[in-house]
Length: 100
Image 1: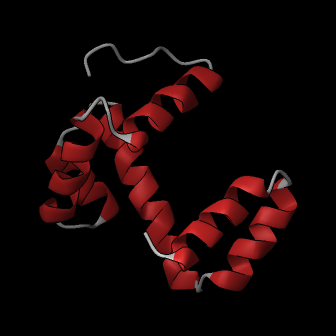
Image 2: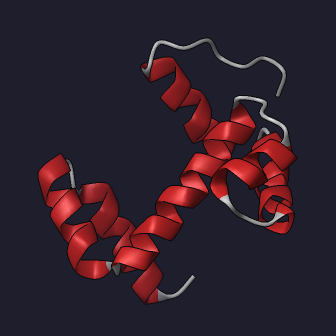
Image 3: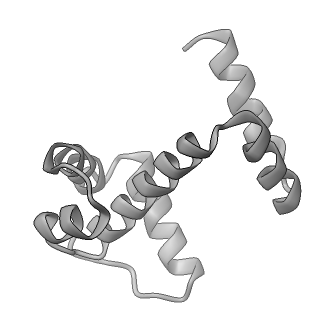
């Protein structure tokens, strides 16, 4: 990992203010990059919920190739994404998906 990546990770983890984070995202990412990031997270959430890949592709208008990559990440119980999705589900008061 580069020094720049380490620096941006350090910065992201230091921001505890939602409004500041939103403004920072608006400044550092283009509208298209923010949409892509949001779409990627939505894809991961729908995979975690157990929705079929073809349904997700249709709903979100993305390729099965992107979904397959996301599915591999979500199915890996050691992935950071899987862990974050699990903790996000618990925070929302939903049931933890024991299938993964």
